[in-house]
Image (cartoon, rainbow, N blue to C red; front, side, top):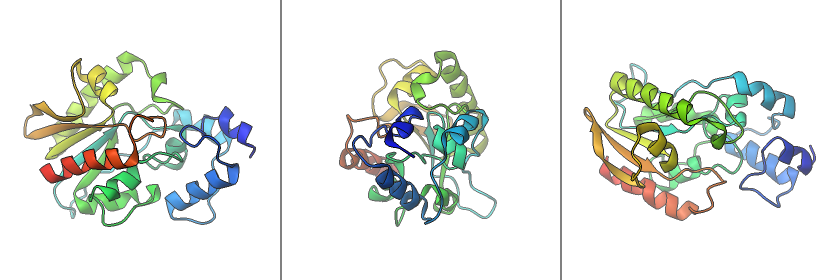
Length: 218
């Protein structure tokens, strides 16, 4: 697939100037596989109608320490069924660097989080190429859904990755990155930086430091 084709389907954010081969290599490496191809334009467009299952503990897993909530699935995530799967997204490297996982997991290994007392969900189920395609009403509705999910599974911590989405979803205009004053019953809340490659304000090192602050509090 040509680089112009990648741009047309929204896959070059955070990886400007890299060759198609390099992007594909990262995609394969991030999933821990060697032969899976990058989803094509038709697959990505079809993924707009899909949702992703939450990663939540089963009956044999330890209690849920931290439930990470993304904003909504990107098209690569929706196409593959794996959270934070877009090439250039830094969630999985940062999760490892901050000490939450003993090694860097590939998106396809997301099921291993439950055994570590970790889970993943999203504020909004609808997949988009960019989070800014969501309406404020969708984000607010997603906040209500997230409150219900937290009430059901009662994680020790909820970690929302994306301060702007958190402000919109819960009507907290002055919210900043870090621990929040509000607790949801027995669940404490922490807002983390968005790990998207489009979030150039945060380096991997700075982001890992903020994730590590949360880990130290758990």
